[in-house]
Length: 153
Image (tube, rainbow, N blue to C red; front, side, top):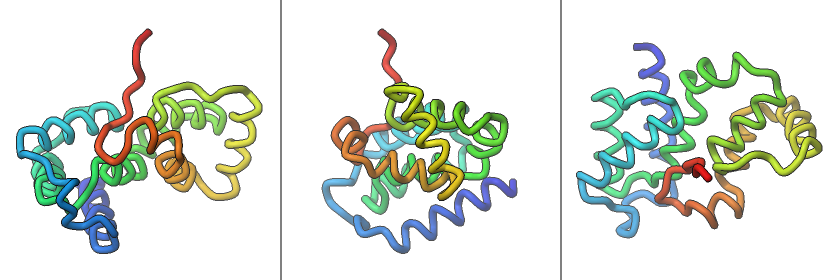
């Protein structure tokens, strides 16, 4: 229950400061919004969306108050994400996981992993996620409306 409160608090805070609020191009039909929320929960948190999260995020997508990219950031920087995926891994393992979750690929090399691990010590894992989501690569591949998905070869 507490993790949901924190996640929703983060959502409210992010929405208050979102520069893309009520943007027509970010609005979704309800059925598509529900699919996007379910997809984001599954791919980012590794579970089905609970009814409260499904209602809140799908309504925000329908109204254009949030982009899929912003929702991915909120889920990815949540306490639940940290507990499930960050706290159990070494910094190098964390970087590999973050690349898979947010760029849908492995890091290019061990030197990239090491550099990002060092950077993570300086700025924290949440800012690494924000950097990945704000990167030209992310925006080019997924834009603001697609949940990153690791493609099977």
